[in-house]
Image 1 (cartoon, each protein chain N blue to C red):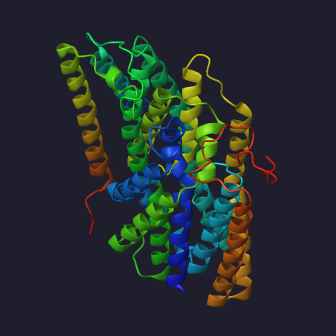
Image 2 (cartoon, chains in turn orange, brown; image 1 turned 180 degrees about the vertical axis):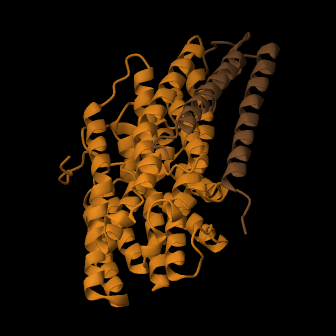
Image 3 (tube, chains in turn purple, yellow; image 1 turned 30 degrees about the horizontal axis):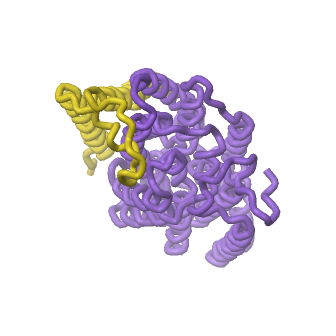
Length: 378
Length: 96
């Protein structure tokens, strides 16, 4: 049973990785600073390193959100199922929603279904998850807008060619920082959940830190997921929101990296997705004449609002189902359903593939580039 | 128990601006001084190598290059220091 839960958690980490590659690498890929495949490889490696860098967020997830006394393995498994399903659905539509909220929502939903609202530490949830989710994109946007303005101001007398070349180099550096930061924040979440499962199982005492094998497994899973690359989300972020030039890319990435790293060290499990999106919009606002596609941004924001409750609903449903059947069999039924759904979503995604070859194609209003086959309704 | 940790919020905004906007600005300053000099603005011959713009990047002024080197070093040092700090904060001493 514990093994099943750990595997599910690692699967979540994997979807987290490929869902979020875009946050770090979308702008570098969009401006051509890095080739798509190189970008995801570097990002994967740095995620691995970042996962070891800070454990503050893992601690928040493991002990700060729900009452560890009522958490059972079934609850954790159901929560993970909620998170994974939401992650896959948003990926299909190319919406960069927050994997963190999907996970937290799923866990909270299943906890509520299992033992009622009193088992949720609402204060921790609001102060460490919801408020940071509201503030972080705004702060990131502000930093990115300031950075963009400064970069264009300082480099205005440089020739276009030199500017492009120079900032592309800078962009590689800043993108690497984002990947590192992503490891410090997102890989932690799965570690926190596995730690939660271990605590529930009695393997670890309450309030424990994540054991080293958990850190290593999570680091591996998230870098593998990153390497696979969520091309759909990369495309939305890199091409859909703003048409990005190299200095803007660098400004956006530096802003994201700084905000994520700072928040990670305070133990805020913020969404790297929200931060990256805020930065990219900020960089569009910081440059005169740049156009932000607010309709795309609006669609994302809607998805953000729904992420937590929807994942919670799926988590609650999964918990109810597993509980109704009971025992290990209940969890197995949950996971089989999950696998079936994942397979179906994967099958759907083949119909209008986004991969390294068309990730940068001209934005024509939809996630999937124009092609003979029917395009995904946006 | 307050809902918003104002001191953390304040720190994130200020350090976020310094690191997230200040460091790239310093990098831009480095690029700018690097581009100063006699070769500034020279049009790159097409097809010289893969990056047709590469020649334009280094202006050739010694002072400019030195300033650029200082700027780039500060940026790198700041990043290294930042990572070290995060590591320190993120690994609190284990309480037994």
